[in-house]
Image (cartoon, rainbow over all chains, first blue to last red; front, side, top):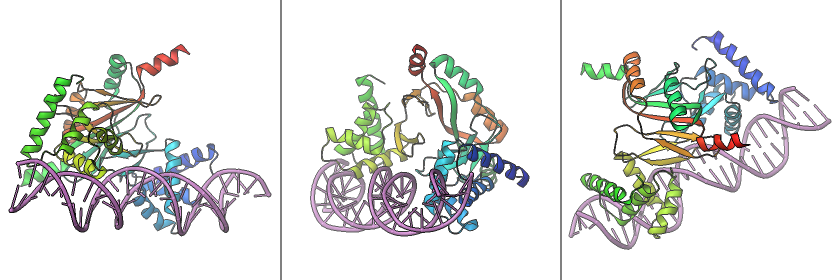
Length: 156
Length: 156
DNA sequence: GTTAGTGCAAATCTTTTGCACAATG
DNA sequence: CATTGTGCAAAAGATTTGCACTAAC
């Protein structure tokens, strides 16, 4: 989702969800969701998101951002993720699949790439069969070296 | 690893690692590692671990537990894990495989089961081939309903 | 004996909460 | 206009740090 048109389509989908949940559509919430959509590959922390939202909505308070993220997490519009640095980050669930996307965390440059293809269908079937565990969702992160950093290393 | 003999074998392996890294073997560190070994399936937070270690080593301070966990994480003896409740937990890496084990988080009872079989070999190969990402390790958690809770639900 | 490690308390950071006021539906 | 949401400041948690003291090697 790079496209602005798709972003505003997503925005109205999310606004509809908020509305259906009986929540008010405040400018603060709208600005927060917009920023999440715009920077959805950045895996922002609450503080980082707050700083970004503040550019559009200067009077917004940090507590409101936290409260909005809480609401969005409850509605399963965002997921909390953590890449083991102790900071909670917020990641938009994408509309296309019921399952959460995977992450590739590069240990050289620190970037996080997303994989939107579901690679776990077979594995989940095995988990249900062998362990009797009914899988509803998953969190998968690979740690390693991304293509760019590998290329750079080979040049040296 | 339920066996006490195996635990003490692991303990000396870890003590050797600490020693080789030029670190001192203090009673506090030994007690912390012992407790981690004994309760390794519990996925304790630093505070929880502190409370348990205190039983054996009453004068230990919370900061020492944090500092020991820091050291153990650097030596890759433990991994920091997070189950999206915002609390960092510490999980012993098991000696048997280079790859970290998987987790099954039951959304009904909250328990975390471990899978020590590596289910991701094929998936990792695909990630390397299709995305050029060199995988070094992974973190995989399945969210769903465990066998016990499913059984209980069917009785009702 | 040196140097690394510890306990304690204070400092820092992240997140939550209480409350008076504001704005949505 | 009823009710939910907001901003601010204070509170609560989690983690780190400074420092004087202690203990491992």
